[in-house]
Amino acid sequence: MKVKFYINRMIDFWVASLLMFFSVFMQPVNAQVLRKPTGPVLLTVSGLISQHNGPNVAEFDLAMLNALPESQIVTKTPWHSAPAKFSGPALKTILNTVDSKGKSFRLTAQDRYEASIPIEDLEKFGPVLALRMDGKNLSVRSRGPVLLMYPFDSYPQIDTDIYYGRSVWQLIHIVVE
Image 1 (cartoon, one colour):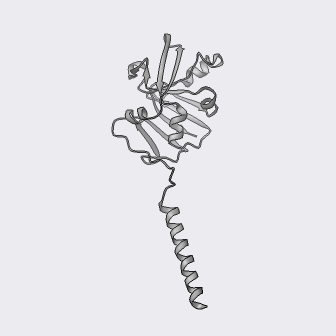
Image 2 (image 1 turned 135 degrees about the vertical axis):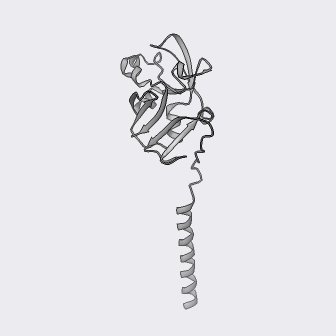
Image 3 (image 1 turned 90 degrees about the horizontal axis):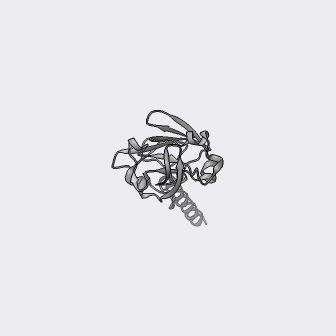
């Protein structure tokens, strides 16, 4: 009887120890590991995110951004005379990649311009982090290398100054709030 009790206690101890080990030291099977950028960092995401590749941030170089699924928007803008095709990952894709937990997003441009984007914009309008316009990589001179673009032609209600202001060019940082 004592031997059986002792064996059961040992089994309980080892099962509990293994469960604790796996819960502390192992990531879930479906968790992605965000690799570190190897090229110049174009975009940094911070705030309420759970996927990091740096101290409390997720940094992306051009290769990492190009590896994400591509979305496209064809639209006229106040800055171009004819409709243009903007392509790159959807903002929603980037935020899913970093496992964002926020309700709004503060975008900052190279010149320190800031705009806030509510989470509802992701589902309603599907803005894209454009890396290319008409197939050509965006440069700093052409409002890149990362430009948040809305589909203005698809949704007449966003063809307004409010949404033009949310279309941040030379985007370098997103803070999830």
